[in-house]
Each structure stands twice: as structure tokens, then as C-alpha cells.
Amino acid sequence: MRYVTFSTTGDPAPRPGVALDDRVVDFRTVASALGADEPPATLLDLIRGGPGAWRRTAETITAFASRASAGGHDARDVRWHAPIPRPLKNVFCVGRNFVGHAAEGARARGVALKLPKVPMYFTKAPTTVAGPYDDVPWHRSATQQLDWEAELGVVIGLAGCDIRREAALEHVFGYTIVNDVTARDLQDLHGQFFKGKSLDGSCPMGPSIVTADEFGDPHAKEIALRINGVEKQRGNTRDMIFRIDVLIESLSHALTLEPGDIIATGTPDGVGFARTPPEFLQDGDVMETEIEGIGTMRNRIVART
Image (cartoon, rainbow, N blue to C red):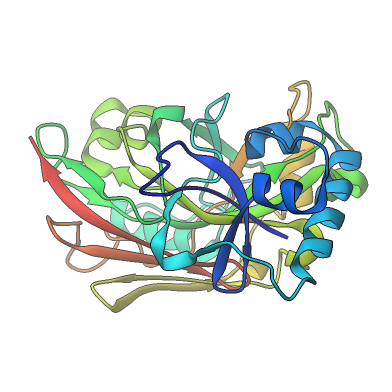
């Protein structure tokens, strides 16, 4: 399934739905057509409902989609929100999790490459989350070095603490796209990642959450990012230093992961600060962030004071 959060011109309240080819169908429409129980009010509610709720929802949608008269909204006519517009906790992020990105960062800073022995974690505040086609603000009074990072996002479905690696992927509800937009000058100024990673609107996410059963192997997916149509990043999740099962085992050690938690798993090489000369996002630039099996986000950079 490809679950989304969307709204329409006539009904601007965000609500959950499912993407079926070129249509977006409201959960309420599906339930009404089949006389099913009241659907979850948000995708987070669905995720927190557990495997029984996931199965019932998927079965109801499959039955609805098989009808010749199945309706919905044209996907071009709705507003797409982040699948989880306001996460309950910070977005967990993993730094330098691709060899190429770790290497380019070392070159840019003039230091020897040292691959991490354990995952490097930081977080982005919930207020960073934006929709897959929303404008991304460039807060010019705060930063002059706004950079891009295309990443695969993991959405936790089952809670757990001290999760064993061999069981880790059983705790995943699905996958989405994250762009870890970063203020590099703030990152350097403060000597840590949080402030430079947490400016408002700096985490576009979406367009959907693709459930784990449909997504398939998360370690064999192409990742790409384009700025104004020019490719800047191209990589594959097979090149992660720490695979997703390792990340979940490590992160959950004495730290409970909960349904709806989001983990951004790192970016390939090609980010702006490490290019020669460095490149940073400018007013009017359009970022396209693409992951095989999920789709493409398109976000325009809009300067603000």
C-alpha cells in the first residue's frame, strides 16, 4: 500500500488516504463504500493500531480498488502533506552512513577519512517537517549555506527496546523519502548538528509511506537528487555503512522506538558543501528528491528574511 496524507480545496483539513495509480482515495470514502468500520483519523493512528489494523485496512482498500466504479481524487488536484505532518518526536537521523559522503566530507574539511565504527545519530525537530511539494524556506537571516541531502526514511510500526538485529525489519511499517536540508554554516558555528538541521520547514517528506511488504528490499534502491533539473546526487541504499537492521538494533539499545518514529538513514555523496567550489541552495531553486519504489518530491526554495 501507498499511504498518504492529503487535503483538497473544498476540504483543507489534512486526512489519510491511499494512492491508487493516478488517484488519491480518502479512507472515509473506502469505508463508506464498503460499509466498513470508522477508519483511522490519521496515518499515525493507523500505524499505532498495529498489524491487525494494517491488515484490515489493506484488505478493505483492495476490495474497494477492485470495483470498476472506484472513485477518488485526481492526484494532481490534491495538496499532498507529509505522511505524518507532525511527528510525535524528533526525526532520528544518521550521519555519514555512506562511504562516498563520509569521504567527500573529509576531503572538504581537509582531514583524513575515518569511517565510523558505530552509527552517528542526531535529530531534526518536528517543526522541520514539510510536505513533498511544499516550498522550503531559506531563512536568510539565519544561514547563507543551505544544503541538500536525499535520504531513505524508515517509519517504525511496532514499538520495541533492545530490538535484535534479526527481528529489526519486523518493526518497520514502511518507507518514505526525506530531504535532510541543512544549514552548513550553523552546523559549523555551533559545533553540533541539531541547530543547523532544525530550521523550520527543512525536512520535506513524502510523497507517501510505502508499506514494507510492497517496498521490498530496502537495501537495493536507487537514490537521486536534482537541482533545477541537474543531477547532484546518485547512489544506492546497498552502499550504506550501517544497514537498517543494524541501525534499529543500535538505536533501540536502551531507547524505546515507538510507532510513527522516523529514521532518516543517511545520504550518498554529492552534497553541496563538499563540491568544488561549494554550492548552496538559492531563492527559486527546485529540488527533486527521488527514491526508487517511492517516487519523487519537488520542493522550491523560497527566500525569507
